Length: 493
Length: 102
Image (cartoon, rainbow over all chains, first blue to last red; front, side, top):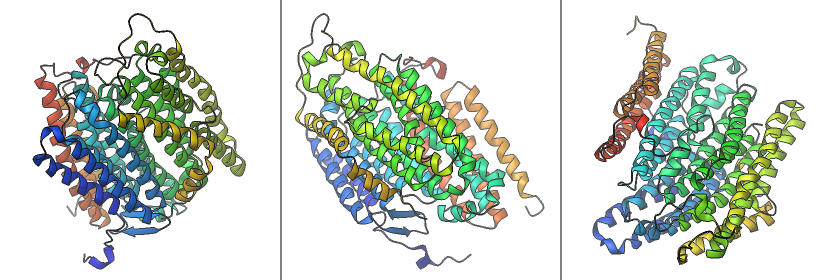
């Protein structure tokens, strides 16, 4: 078999964002050797500059549809949309990292390398149009996150969360890969373009090997998105990992995983929607039930937010169910909204626990309004947004997803979209309880002795103010982001 | 292998995959669980190689190489994490690693 090298389509501009982030990671790794331990802030600065570079490099991809490297990656609006979310999340994470790491004697340069490597993997996943690159992206982000979860090496909880994430993540990777092998065996294609051709044929719906493969693939992706019933690892890993890592991965991993879900189900297999609708709808409904109902009984805020993350995975998945670009647009908007508000919520948890004690317990948050009004106010905004109360961005995220289901039900003229919609609405009401509980607890008068006020650092203050402002402003003007999401959702193969 | 039909390899790979998956679920030592995961990945490699041969395309073998390489990287990270837990003097039993319970 002779391969024409020119036909492969080598085009480095397509993967420029990934290349910039990877290059920065290597640069930080080398710089770490020469920079004295007390000046590691420079590494954070270099990482931020690299991520800004990736942000800029993503902009030219907008509005294009450039396939490269033998159709394995694409530079399109969809990838650019996710690159911006991922790069911004990473930048905000790195901004608040130095102070957090120093307080715990974890100030190693490798931290930034791993954050950058994970970001590169996530960006690759958003741009991947081949089973190989999807696998590569998932593994790159997972391996970096396994190490990051165990980054507090001497803490037993951190070690334990790394081990659990590793074993369950490896297990899920096995299913993901076996699914890919079955899909390859059924279709003879590894690129999504090739798969879409086969999946569009009328006989594809009866191909048991292909359907089984798609099922296994969904298990692997649902695991990464922490959707129930593949969510078992989420609470433990979120709780045990250093809070700053949880902040990063709760937002970025979910965004990247749903990028792959969206591309695979809406762009490649829309013709098989009648086959994958019921399994995916069940995953969404399960996530909504388990996430929201178990979150009620959590007293640890990190665990509560972990279950809330599972619930939100269900909401995000609802937009994929119709299998149309319109539905996908609402999913993309939800991911952007979730990134802003969930990052903010975890950042407040990070800030409250900045001195390393056990502060994720809800009792510690009693009367936070009187001790640390700024933190409590921003946390209130994020909680209201996560609950979906107007005029925050979370309200419109839910509204758009619900609307896409209603539109799908009307166009398809079938009742199948009503069941998940009703569950989602009921569960939204349930979620008010545990989100608003945090606000109420913060308003209660503090009991016992009050720990002395610790100032919020300048970088953390800025990041929180930006997130809170974005949560409200995007809620007042949701149209801009939704237009972008609609453009990005028009994925073509 | 000309005389052996392709689906024999698929069945074998399915059996190996199942053995690995069941092993992950019933074994308690993290190291053994990790070996079972590797077994699952090797079943995948066999499936890819056999299907590549059956479909007369090189993609399957390329994919198998990719999986082998990534699995090696995963082993490095995995063993490092397992050793770290072991060094902390904890029992090598996943049922006893339960500091976090709701």
